[in-house]
Amino acid sequence: MAEHWATLGVDLHLEPTGPGLRRGLTDALREGVRTGRLAPGTRLPSSRTLAADLGIARNTVADAYADLVAEGWLTARQGSGTRVAMGAPSALSGQRSRRAASPTGPARFRDRSRPHYDLRPGTPDLASFPRTEWLKAARRALAAAPNDALGYGDPRGRPELRTALAGYLSRARGVRADPQRLLICGGFAHALTILGAVLRDRGVHTVAVESYGLDRHRDVLTAAGLRTVPLPFDERGTDPGRLTDTGAGAVLLTPAHQFPMGEPLHPDRRAAVVDWARRTGGLVLEDDYDGEFRYDRQPVGALQGLDPDRVVYLGTASKSLAPGLRLAWAVLPPGLADDLTAARGGLDTCGVLDQLTLAEFLTSGAYDRHVRSSRLRYRRRRDALVAALAERAPEVRATGIAAGLHAVLRLPPGTERSVVRSAAWQGLGLYGLSFFRHPDAVTERLDAVVVGYGTPPDHAWAGALDALCRALP
Ligand SMILES: Cc1ncc(COP(=O)(O)O)c(C=O)c1O
Image 1 (cartoon, protein in one colour):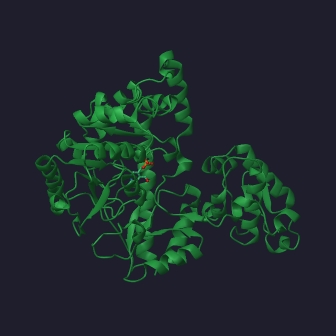
Image 2 (cartoon, helix red, strand yellow):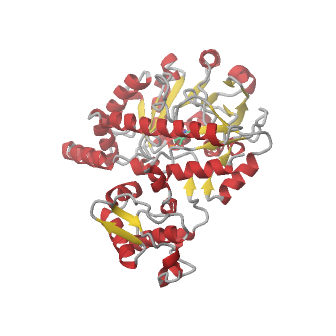
Image 3 (cartoon, protein in one colour):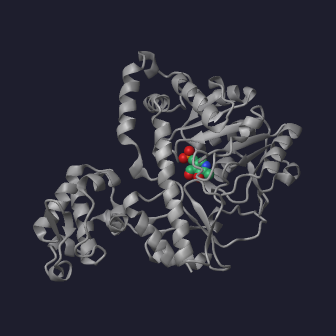
């Protein structure tokens, strides 16, 4: 079934909103049949399934199917669903409708910056966002909210959410969380922006970071007037041994699952980081961006549990739910909580309805259920990736632990650029590892690509994997 859906890769280009959606979908499907991507006889997903995958109304899909049945590209029969007509594409290619023959087509299908398939890490499968459960939680939360919840409120965030998160984080991630010292932010990047400003005010000039990481987070620190210094990276992961030499007042780490390399921080090194912070008065910024997603064993608990006075715990809904929510949380050491709240002021807060909804989502158990089903989805994808590599690209291996929504694939030396280029030719969005490297890193250069297997919707995953295997040596 998945293979059939994968052939609908063009659908990835759909914008799930705006006028012309039906026409856009019709054109994309017609193009799929015309080019042979959708072979005669292929059974298409039901309109309900495709609508859910694409995040659009079921009627839009049903109408697009009906148009194409009327034009002869598809057939619809009771009991056997909607299929590509047996005569397509050859019998029909000469009589393409004027719309399909147009060299332009809807702008969104011509946007070359959007790949057919997307394996860039960053977003979870947005088609699996739990819309129904979220709506139910939103309804319950708004019905129960007191009137004053709709006022400006506490700059730390709604107490309902801080309390729900404190319970969840201590149960699921071993965080020592007090709702009084929890701050709700508009994403991890927002929390880092406020932290950067406070650290700078406190006289910090340098923040140590990992050799591999996200440039946008380094940029946030730079914009706050802080210098970032990369820590060495070796076969045991990030090495904090030279932290003292860097003169850093803080260190930003991804201890549970290094981003993007995929290893947890070695137990000795966890202890060494906390020891450094205690000795020097430094601060550890723990980015626990995907801590819930471990597939082979219980996730490693949060580093913050070792010393809540020296470690700032930072979590986000961007992987577990959706980055568009812009919801994240910081659990702060005692002194810092007041400074951050003051620095942020009373107006730089997050939308109260989303905060209340997330609180309800957590306390009702819907968050746990969603994380569990997402874990299964991503674990299957990771297993499929590893199996496909063994069969089709034996020179390439996935490194890192079985966790998260991405994997680093180590390539034969000197091949990273050509693999990324070849992926682009296949219409596949893919980043080379060098994209994540700190410009001052002295660590040995490794040829690799970072595969965000969480990104595609289910119907496109098999196609994306196939395109990846074709791009690999
Ligand atoms: C390493 C890392 N940290 C944090 C985040 C979350 O960032 P935000 O909450 O700003 O969306 C991501 C998401 O892509 C990430 O990859």
